Length: 505
Image (cartoon, rainbow, N blue to C red; front, side, top):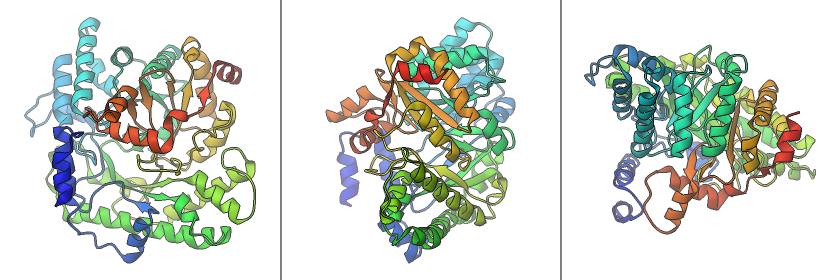
């Protein structure tokens, strides 16, 4: 009970954060999954991690409602009719958001907000005021920057207003992605998005062509950069540390022939147990109004098999073979990394879960962004911070991995203040990167207050408040501080004007 008292007495927690922490403690007092000793062993060794999902899943980790359907039909449960103007539209959405669950208790996806609001844009001045209040309300009430909105791919009046307001407000919530397609997205809208991203760390750019192909049409980017099916979501995200797994290996052959297959079996067993309890024992899919009103459907949910620490894994395996080279800067190391991910992908796709119909009864591979307590484990397939090569080489090195991760992978690029004067050069880089197979591209300007930590945003000024012992509004500030202190996220290589200008030509 001392842990409960510590939560109650913690001065750095807001009231909502305290309630959430107490609820999570209560859930974790249960043991309903009956995990076998193999899973427990590797969870204790920090090879497998369930990312704070809790011991008794009573809601899917990520819920991706069909907001377009909601705007057309309203909601009987919420006693809301179809909206008639911009004010009713944002009011209806804000009400629904309070009832969309996730692992963090706030919605991880709030819709393709430009297309949702576009039918109601009449007076642009009034609409801008409405959108500004809309985004302000989200930032102050859905206080977790895993809350994610999408815009695009086509330019709209609402999309332009969202970009303008986002740049003005400088808020870390919601995270935003532009679904970008060179053939559908106007160059002017793309450049405006880049300018906004440099000033506010959002939007990121998603390769719309690749995502549409992987998801058979419409898709959502949720949470960090997670590709998911609209009207569904993900039951669970469990991650494995390839970095820690490699430390168990006696040789490269032992790693590939014995450890990787066992790793996949234990991970998928844990995921299966979570999915089975959620579907068969808990009542979300039986009683929640989102299901009853057709805003989500169980058969549109999948599960996410996450990995981190590829760079450290590769470096460990090379050392076992008495070979030199580091992941990110050495051809042999990069090829070994590709071999690891290809093998993981094959093993994951051999596993069947009957409740993942939408993804052909397979879990989706996910390059996980890391957590605040990670120390020495690089996110997903990324090159360790401080070891990034030249921008062109970085993109060429990263792109081949992206095809394996339909549910999300991405790299982050920090630019100097001169980038704002030449956003067209960055657009050329994005176009080139997407042409090579890059799935997702994030950027921010070094001098701004809002920065991208891994897949989410925080304010440097809020981290400073936390350093001083003060409570902060947004949950993810705590995670950002951990990323700063443990993973050196402020030390990413700064991409300077001469570098990105020369590489865009």
